Length: 303
Image (cartoon, rainbow, N blue to C red; front, side, top):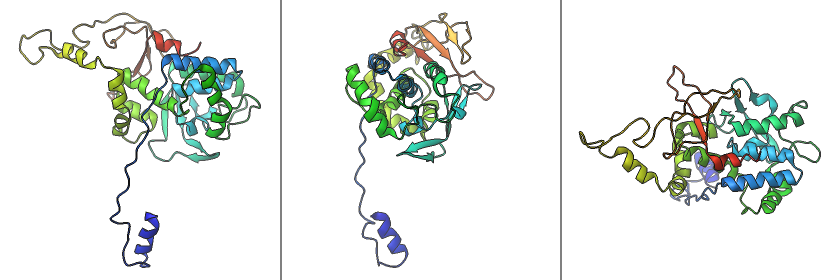
């Protein structure tokens, strides 16, 4: 309506724009409600028991790439770059129509973390030779029509069978963001992975959830920086915190080769069971990106 009056005023059809002083109502968005590790595991197991292996791969891939549902349905095998370990996002399935991404930020490369690679590897035997869309229906092998078809045919039933409170498929995207942010990854990098134009969009959406999820952050910061502002006033700051130390751990790169070596940090003072090293440090100063998976997250792979 505002656009109609604006155009009419610009064309001289009306003397003034009656909407010029009308304020837009504030837009309220629902709070993210990510799936817990046990819920993710239950959903994936439910899809397997329902006889939907392709749907299981698709949902696991969604959990670990953070793609929008429209992007998830449109990715093709030609978008996968196995050498770089990424998938290129170039298009989206919007109500059954393939369209290019809306913004420059949406046109991006998403790093394939190990659980996402695992889903692709299983899916490869099912649709790779046909080419085209990676994820297809389990009943006739045709591409998904749209997100409504996914919701009606498999998603609602899977959540019900898993005993998980119903949330939309889009919450898989929120789950991905919450996993990375609560693991201490760089918000700027995460925003690029998710196709956000700015980091502020990411922080505005998820900062409150992270604070509630990690109530011990205040105590950890107090311990880490105690005495750091006073000469001789305590342990002060160190690379890994006063109570943390470097501990050996297993590392794995995108090619699946054992990297060996030692872990470079811990999360909350507790050494993770596994660190997947995914991006090497380079001369441009880009920091490495690592995802630390504890025992509960490992269970979510549904292996």
